[in-house]
Length: 102
Image 1 (cartoon, rainbow, N blue to C red):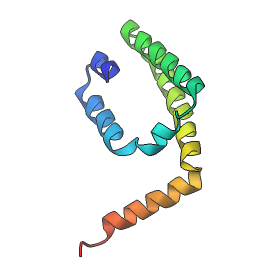
Image 2 (image 1 turned 180 degrees about the vertical axis):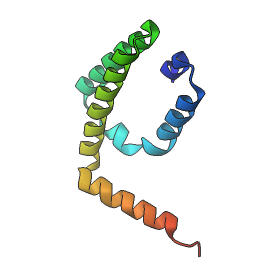
Image 3 (image 1 turned 90 degrees about the vertical axis):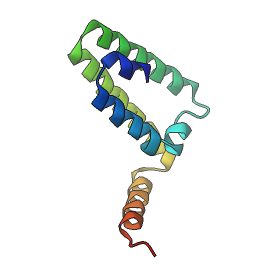
């Protein structure tokens, strides 16, 4: 979260904290289990992103962020069992939320 503090944008901080609290759970964790290569790649990208933010290079920061997002999304999809599993679990979650309380 230190990177968010560097950006000094309360809306982005809130959005990211909510993602971490409600969206990134087991699949995120499992994407890194026994994968030191992924941990290092993620760490290196975050350092590059922080440097771009500190340098005020908005375009570079956006490119690094988008690439990192795509890479981690792929790892999480793989860890969750593939996009079909994620889609079906999401549909079940929406159905459960829409169901009237008994």
